[in-house]
Image (cartoon, rainbow, N blue to C red; front, side, top):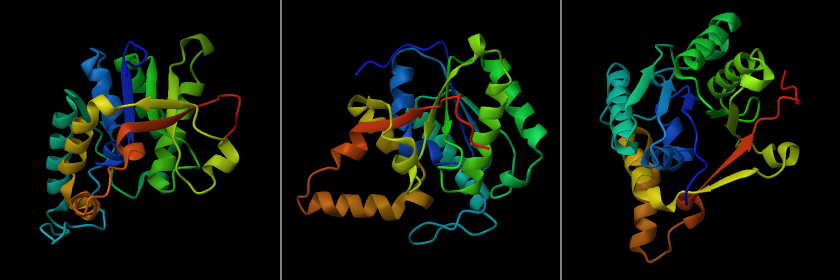
Length: 228
């Protein structure tokens, strides 16, 4: 599937591996189409609970491990513009609002995106996810309407469909399935259980979960809605 062409795509997530699950196929597809993609990752996920299976990281080494995994993931997707923003995992919700908005404004000014991909505020489960999304939305809301980039937002809280309806953007990323799997494998400290279970099911003759591997879904953020 060919995705609509964009001037530049800015992806903003708080943790290494956030990109792998829901947008790595979309990112890889845009890159194959010649669309520049910038990925801004706010933390190194140093407070993540998983240390590998069996464990191969420690609390002390996990930041380094996850940084290397992030670098491997962006290489798998073809991303060449990675911004590591230097915030601390599980503290983004406590950062000063204006500091966060200014960070997003600077990213937007530097990359001039026509599309931003992030989480949907209040529907992304983790406090870091929601805080990141709020900062992005607030920064874009301050822009003039005619200059605002489109925002594709990921939502996966249990009540997402109840309150937001079905996602209105669906990308068939079957052509970038290998890049998506490469991104997931790169984050092995966090994804080993899932990948082992998937490989076991395939070995037992169960079909691939084509819905998960072949499609990525987004909400187009509506600035007429108020998430505050």
